[in-house]
Image (cartoon, rainbow, N blue to C red; front, side, top):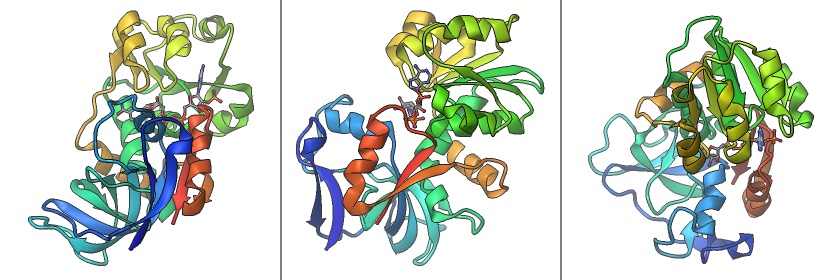
Length: 301
Ligand SMILES: NC(=O)c1ccc[n+]([C@@H]2O[C@H](COP(=O)([O-])OP(=O)(O)OC[C@H]3O[C@@H](n4cnc5c(N)ncnc54)[C@H](OP(=O)(O)O)[C@@H]3O)[C@@H](O)[C@H]2O)c1
């Protein structure tokens, strides 16, 4: 048996529970792992709330990204062996907040020695999204990138990628995250009322790229600073993107391997700020569900 954190119906956090489940063999194209760490993402509570549709068998395991050690290799999988240290996205029907889980082999990569299991667990969803967001529009050295939500899981990595490319990076975040943002060498702009004016004051000629991780009013306020609407890319809010003429992030198959390489060389730090044991996965999810997480939250079985 293995412990798995699940929700037993679509709805609020009261639907979440830690259960004992059978250990299953990996199917074709899958890898079974003993989990070492799992990243928490907004999508975890969005799925539980039914915001992405109310389908799939219940109880539904929670958590999308994990690192761990391979315990079994499914049919047709090449390039992985039992004992390998890996990081990847969970296979359909499986969850990362568990002692053991199953990954999709085509969305899994070897974990470099230089990356801790905790950091590795933040790359399949958050890290790869940060990579894709910052590579959808090609900027040159010295061009300006605004990151809305720069203190969060994806935003902090996106801002660091911008610095690696020598972009002039401006991070929008709440006042409490000033230090977290400025420690990256990023210019800080406080979010909330008046943010559009503060951005305009700092960037009178506008921005070459706006990367948005907050959506809604924050996206509406920041979008006009871009030199044109197509230079605004959001991961957070499809409807507001349509309203302001922004683009939605296009996920790629190479983002995971690329961000893993970048983190391996030590130039981007996923910045794990909170670790919760599996029995307290609910508190970890609540921290992210609050909408103001700093860096990445991970669950450790
Ligand atoms: N499409 C995809 O493939 C994909 C993949 C992964 C994630 N996502 C989405 O991307 C979004 C961000 O994910 P994440 O993991 O980075 O979430 P996160 O770690 O919760 O970070 C979100 C950040 O936004 C900031 N924020 C909230 N309201 C803001 C405002 N008005 N102005 C500026 N910043 C504000 C929050 O902190 P402060 O307000 O305290 O500064 C927080 O740091 C989520 O909606 C998630 O579902 C999409």
